[in-house]
Image (cartoon, rainbow, N blue to C red; front, side, top):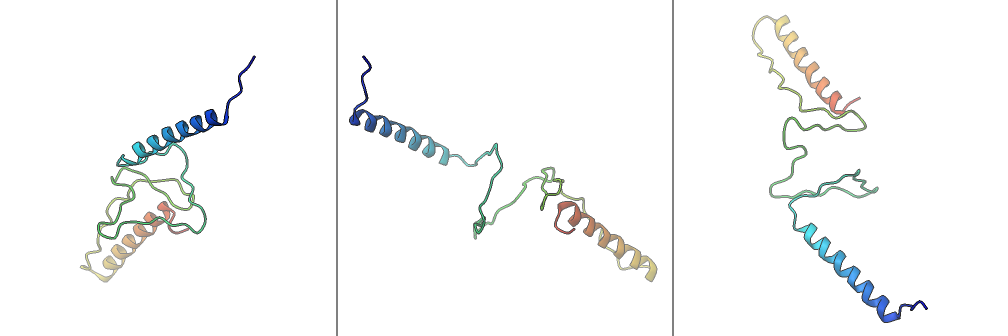
Length: 114
């Protein structure tokens, strides 16, 4: 004959499960980072809040990839040469156009402009 669980037995099991979950969450919160193995979904009307004193970084190394608005993630773009502003007017114009073109390409590759 099978013995059924009493209400007290159910309460004790429930409390045991709660204790295990509480301990696991407590241990997890002591870590200095969270590692997600699934997409992080932020519901509509919620924001990412950052610290006011030191701020935060997204991608902490130049070889880490990031993309916005469905674009393929890319590494940080290489430095764009500053136009010198010297030389013939045509040379200055060519340098400025090349710098602008590089900026537009970098923004496009990130997905920040279409």
